[in-house]
Length: 392
Image 1 (cartoon, helix red, strand yellow):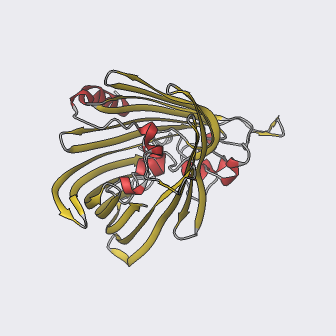
Image 2: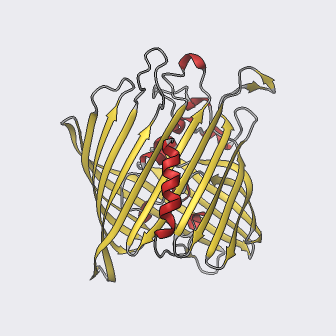
Image 3: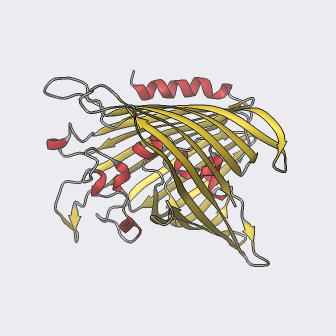
């Protein structure tokens, strides 16, 4: 039985045993943010900031303590009419080192079950890509599967349908969109491996590099007691196989399939996500640049203390652990039959203080083990982080 079949079997057996959860689906998290209305204006504004310190060492060698202003994001929201909504998000990373338009979408709601969405959207692949705001998480670093296997944050220009269907204690949600897609830099990059994160290009907001849109979608089932289970898929050509309509290369596709889940067992919060990539890679480089990749994480958080603090009646201290693994190149060398490595494992521990649900002070310890493509002794990277994130 393959690894992903074990994971799916585990979810099918264990998911119904989990406990009480709120009714907000992953699909609606993009609107589940604090906004401030200005007078009688139909426009509301909000955002979040994230800053932290880092002290890491690699095989005992450290560059010392550093501080960073990782993100400053601004939201604009407007209810144009009772059934037309606009949402945008502008992100500033590391001060003004990188400025990106993350979201700029318009929703036309015919019914809750049929919503037409167009603009710059968050691609519905996995749950974290749609629900990644820093103040919502007690871990400073995003899960490796969401940054190394799924190229989070993945926004793209496109259009499609989404909706929610309610039945007793069940909520079924769906999202299906056409988007421009990734580019040749999936393999033509300086990473020396297949790396979907490099396949993102600002040019994708202006045009498709091959005139063939990618198809992406997610379906999810949420039970008010059990939690949410989602399955998503992304498929699209990444290379410029046509120029001005004329074929110049063989079409090469990217396929991403993801399974995500979240729930609670009494006070214990459980989150997880697993993703599997299949990439059409030219045969002459297929052993160095992986044609199959996978990764996943499992995270658990539990509150240990609730106490009045900083003007809040119920400030909460949480503790948690996250286990992660990514394999950039799944397979074996054809000449020797030896396993291809190029993989990373990680373990992280967190303790956080939440004066309110919108603000978190976080202390993390992380340990990574990385093995190169030949499987040489693992390079170890470990360190501490202290940070703060808050909506405003």
